[in-house]
Amino acid sequence: SDEIYLIVNDDTSSDVFAKGKHNILVPFIIYVICMGLLLSSLTIALPWWILGEAVGVTCLVFGGITLIGLLGKGRIPGLGLLAIGIALGISLLSLFNFIMFITGVSDGTSMSWVISFAFFALIMIISIIDVRNIKNIAANQNYENKNLILYCGFMIYTDFIGILVRVIALLARSKK
Image (tube, rainbow, N blue to C red; front, side, top):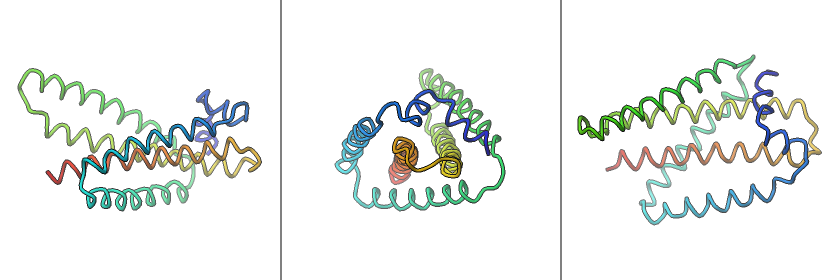
């Protein structure tokens, strides 16, 4: 479980924020406002029931991911390798799909479904790793460091938004 905690601390921004050298409240608020503005444009473009379904599905998926991350025992370094493999696969599939579309061999719709589901799986694996990291941080840290608490909240928020955006895209595409 120490390896998972080291993944969080390998990022230089997390080191700076976790040590409390800079206040992350302002960047966090700016990010939340920007995401709120971007996501609110979806209310104009999509029917309300697709957005409602997306929020419900996202809550269920995120709840399951949280349970897996919290209740999982032992180390999970294999998930990091799986995430890297999926990211590489998504990159290669996207390039291949783009080349097939440009050359006119394929319209790219079937491959784009595969890419969408692979990207969704990648986001879910990253979310599981983040929940495990937060669990380890909570077990090893005191709660007086406000930046560390905000950083953990930021990780959860960005994971939820990432899943929500992918679910909205998948539902909107499937309803056409």
